[in-house]
Length: 417
Image 1 (spheres, rainbow, N blue to C red):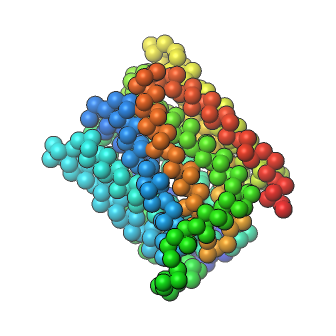
Image 2: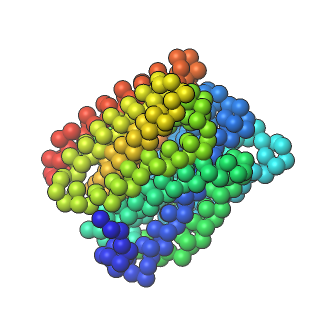
């Protein structure tokens, strides 16, 4: 399927507002992918971090969903979502610029890296909640899934090219300098978002009767009371928990266990995520033939089974470097294909079953569970990696991932109902 910006999505939003939002998201994703490769490399190679320390770094990036995830949803439903995203992008740019600066001053440490990760995590909570609640305000209901597919396609192009480019750049410059690319990308993202027009109504300032806790509980009750959202929340929560174990240990698998180097890691992650791009391009045709529940179930099963390639690669002789690299690429390819297929379908289902004035609270409530488990999983991954080894810990991640499709089997009857 060829992606074109001249179809119904763009004509629907008029004046190119979807195109500008799409561009902002793409630039942000490119920078984010640079950071995903460079941050653990900074910790492992520049600051000599071990498995536990890498786990703490991942936890620092995600613990904010537990701390402020629910109130963030209530706040974002009151605020302008576009303004929220602009502010969050600027904060991430400024804070990430501190990594190369501290490194140049010879003051960079793991403590500083954790602190920077926490601030980036806080900004990401607000950006992500606003981002996933924004699409229905710039496209019509019938174009939501198509818009999500296009946004996901650019995310996967970024995921394919970003890590590979970061890996190549790491050969020429130190990892802290690569973080500067991430910071610059967020500045450009904020600039594009500032030009977007949307249909979101401007709300009056909340009075005494609009209490924060009341708004938070309304979002939680809506998710718990809706059988579709309730099942999705459980499924995505379990999936992200075990995926975080795998994600946390993958840099250690590549850099330490297999000794392949940061360049190979970037290339493996980049080439492997082409599966996600293929998923985003083919999903509209698949959805024309299959119901959303079946698509989501198959996607999760494919992602879980593909994860087997990672511990298998780690079990091979490190001197036979070609075979582990091929397995890593195939594993990443299948994982991202399945995960992206599931993600586009489930986000679209969530946006369609939720009233627009509760989108941010619904998103925040689900992300509180989904992302709130990630710091626990990251710390657990670090502990497991230190005590039983990287490869056995990855097998635990695989075993858990294979259970994630169970809550959504047979969901189509609930979606139709």
